[in-house]
Length: 360
Image (cartoon, rainbow, N blue to C red):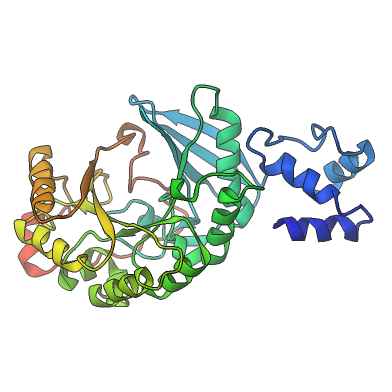
């Protein structure tokens, strides 16, 4: 709940309004992040006891941690409502990133993504989203290493849970909340173009757009959301939002490289043409294989060539190496299958069938 809602909750039960600021500080001050009401020592003992009886501090609990050989940790949370939420703690030399989820499962059926095989179960609540960050900080922040960046790139499509995602971002970045820089929080969308204007208006966090194809034919196949919001519609929404003057952002276009599908020289040329009017950069991502997809990763040498092609075309481009694939913690590998029937595969355009050597 917001600070104002917390104040209303307390005053409605006979408490003085200033207690809301004290309680809020215990909940969200990154130096406190209390794990129990009893530890909130500047609250009266009677109030602490009442809160212990009537309220819940954490909506999720950390059930297990799976650590990869490269130091990445896959965090499995159990929410009170049931299911399993997955987040990923990713250390590197200059930062520590937490990748959080916004939904249980996902309805968008991107063909290369393991989470998509879960189907959609439900949206996460505001508390369930924030608690991923709070519990991760409680368990893993040290004086030497603290979570510095948060990315909404875990399970689910954030723009399909927009109310809770925007509120979570605002608490993460507010001075009275976790006090993170808005430049250190990034929300990723598969391209729900109708929500882009609202995101620019109401949220200061960074925006990433999962592009992954340069023609409607291919994107319709690997990302069915493109049938509703084709590339022309998506790019126009981004161009309009970028020129609106509201919460200006540098858009990151994420591009998962799929061998024989989207890694041709012509794809690099089309990327440069598609994004030329949008202040942006491109982040190339190595595909992380799993047994629910027929796609194959691009050899590292080809990925570097593709990056060089984009840079020669004037596109600022980075190349992200995989983190945590041995624990199914890498990009596109999160999720627990079997809770509902898997969505159907989409039919590839005929010219790609032979290239893919489809797994039967």
